[in-house]
Amino acid sequence: MADNLSKEQRRKNMQAIKSHSKLEEKVTKALWKKGIRFRKNVKTLPGKPDIAIQKYKVVIFIDSCFWHACKHHGNMPKSNLEYWEQKLNRNKERDLKINEHYKTIQWNLLRLWEHEFKENFDATVNKIAAFIQDAKK
Image (cartoon, rainbow, N blue to C red; front, side):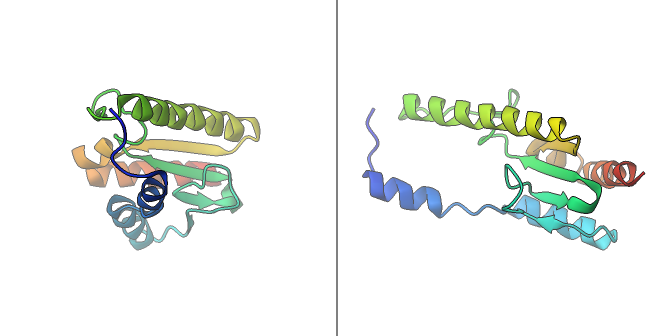
């Protein structure tokens, strides 16, 4: 099935998607309250991590179940199947390359799924805090 929007309309739609979701906002506020200081969506770092602390070589990504094709909760749209398969596969491939990049330069990388926060928000925020504390050592 063909896309019902023109290429220009689709581009504008995709550009309107905010890089910082409500979930990310909630997480960063919780970390800030814990006294953890960081930068959000650092454009100079590969993958534009959701949370970064360059001093401790820490990057944290909060992956949406849809956009990063979670095996448990990701769903494939019914229309324009070919487009979405390519798009989501590119996202997964990019995630793997980003992971490899940070591993190669010996940074501390943590990837969390959106559903982890939905299952137990406080425990997942504590997991981030513990990860950052370990990186400081």
